[in-house]
Amino acid sequence: MKKILLLATACLLQTFSPYTAMAQTGQAPQLDLVPLPVKVENHTGVFTLTANTPLVSAPSLTGITELFATMLRAPSGFQLLHATHNSKGIHFDLSPTYNKTLGEEGYILDITPTRIDISANRPAGLFYAMQSLLQLLPKEVEGHELAAHQRWTIPCVKITDYPRFGWRGLMLDVSRHYFPKEAVKKYIDQLARYKMNVFHWHLTDDQGWRIEIKSLPELTTIGAWRAPRMGAWWTREPRAKGEQVTYGGYYTQEEVKEIVQYAKTRFVTILPEIDVPGHSLAALAAYPQLSCTGGPFDVNVGNVFYAREDNALCPGNEQSFELMDKVITEIAGLFPGPYIHIGGDECYKGFWKKCEKCRKRMADEKLQSAEELQSYFIRRMEKIIISKGKKMIGWDEILEGGLAPEATVMSWRGMQGGLNAAKMKHPVIMTPDSHCYLDLYQGDPAGEPLTYSMLTLTSCYKFEPVPNEITDPSLILGGQGNLWTESVPNYRHAEYMTWPRAFALCEVFWSPKSARNWDSFISRMETQLARFDVAHVNYARSVYDAAIKPVKKDSSQPMRIVLTRELDKLDIYYTFDGTFPDNFSPKYTDTLNIPKGADTFRMITYRNNKPIGKMITTSIKELEKRIEKK
Ligand code: ACM
Ligand code: ZN
Image 1: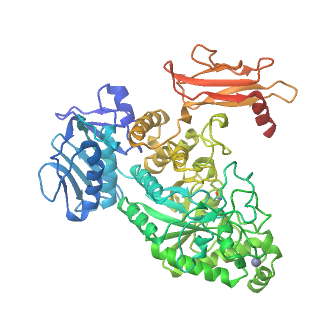
Image 2: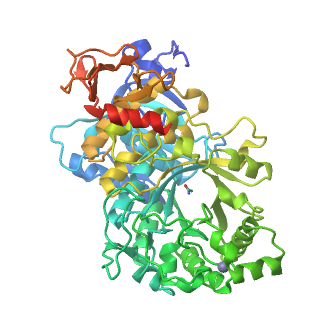
Image 3: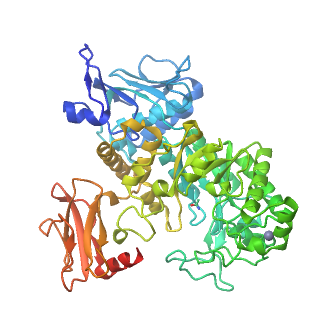
């Protein structure tokens, strides 16, 4: 933790790490920015934004100033005016000479009582400065209605800031559940507000093909629709014969263009993913002749099928590549970003091994294994992608059987795939399931909607994308949080699963490693959550709950209960007698014995004698099951 340097200068300039400022001076403004900026110098006074504050910039930058003006319009009622020259107001300027420290996305934001100066090498930096500026305004700026009598003051500070990594991503799976265009835009807007710059759009999978391909209309007329189902994923009834396929949807190319443009104005690059050769059941429902077994297939509804039913394109069939050429041609035309993601993950190869066309391909190409056949498929995909002027990314399975020559690897099964790829001098994006999978439980399963495994906010915040073993850290482009949506049936829940864990990740990807501090993060996160309340963005409060760990010394011993918490200052109260605990109930201090005959365990957390977590109830039987599963 940096110490505050109180400089004895006339302007009382301070350099400080924002999270220490309040504690040590008791008077500096609490900035609570997420992600934490590289450097903040604290001045005295405030700038007050009024209806007459001009937004001063070159005409080419009005895309950025207009976003700022639009954001202010509803809560302030101001119609902020743009100007190219004015001595006052908020100035957005590109630096006349390139500032190496700031790089491509950094900025300097200098706020004085009379004017605000924002400078950067590139427009992206001005955009990120604007995000910091918005966070310095009162939280009412996030509102959709007029906040009458609100004073729009901004503390006088000078921020110098730039990101640690160039790739700061969030992935949304729109196949397992479909989220309409407006929801996708809202997701992009939120990630950009926290200085993330890649939206990885998982557009196709076994449960739905979600992008219009004009030359292959059946991909969406058939592949975008499935029988409607609720209930736990992988326990669902498959589509019945003749059952209507009424759940689904897809993005038309017009909608895609609109979303691409929306992302572009927020300096977000979209990474489209077409997941092949596995995860292709929705495509095969439309084109069953491209499988090894011939079909017919239904778009999966969340019923178990893996290894029982074919869901991979046949790499022995030339038509598979012809189809992919058409798809990639249209994808490359729609998305201006440099990369296309081709998936490559979790491909079941059992049907390839039995397929005549696949065997012939293996003989002709002298391939020794199904993994080499997958590698053959991916290499051909890379050729197609390069021929359209793009670069290929794949999940770390693309290392198996030999990595395609120019591939970038997205490491998800831990960090090892990324490490292996970097050893071969390939670029890597780190997104290990141990730290980045936002579909996993973020609190005790007894207090959360059904999903599986566990990824706490603490684990997200501990993520370190550059492993010690790496010899060339520049190969680690950055990292990404991934929201798979098997257990995310609506957009509100997508937000719940994303935030606040994505706050932790955006700080990992943006802020200096040395500045990471859990207590500071939590306090800044709480400020952001209050802003989300105003903005009507959903989020999880699971970090305020305790988690239950049933323990047994050995099978002959009775089960006991250990309670854990992510935040120190929480008190946990519990009951075993079926009643609702409060802060007059027993307080947890150490491992609990379960009273004879107890069938229910309940707990709730308090902070400063106020309830803060949710009431969590579970049966002793459920806890026994947790021990058996281990
Ligand atoms: C993945 O989670 N199958 C990339
Ligand atoms: Zn085949």
